[in-house]
Length: 257
Image 1 (cartoon, rainbow, N blue to C red):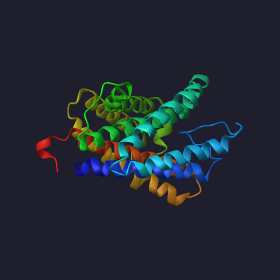
Image 2 (tube, rainbow, N blue to C red; image 1 turned 135 degrees about the horizontal axis):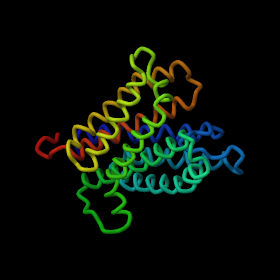
Image 3 (spheres, rainbow, N blue to C red; image 1 turned 90 degrees about the vertical axis):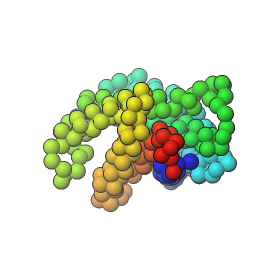
């Protein structure tokens, strides 16, 4: 496993573990990535159970022998919850940008788990099968690439809102909202057609790492009780990890370390 893949695995596993811990501690938190209705019966129990599973999967993905199984379980769970929780919300509120963003971030975590599963299987020398799960795992990078297009589109549709998230010290806030949207398109295209995919994936990872340090980190420090800020930071950390894992996947064997 290349150093890039190892770094990506670390970032992604840590992010999933931290999200799981957050769900366990704050069962009343109506997170954008898991928007269960506050009045839902047994909601707190469901959130805690979900948090426990994510915590176990996050820790499991860091274990060499069982990492691929933990990643596959996590991916299947996230896809199931997308269908049960996010899809009905999107259908009921199609103009809610927050609902779309939360759903796409949730799917991105699922795609990241598939990518990690494949990376571990390659390291272990396991042959790809022909079952449904194997085909789903093989589609991980393509799913993630499509989601990058979706994120890029959201940057154009909700540019004014996204511009408000740009740090105050950065000039041309609206420009950055559109520019990042264009970058998402380019990164997604590179992954889908596998042209400049290594460079694009690495840049994606570094971009999200910069956001963790320069955007989400300061926001958390300024408002440590804002749970949304913590979640956004964890998502950015996971996206950083996915970028590194993809960069490791597309790295030419001759240049691998």
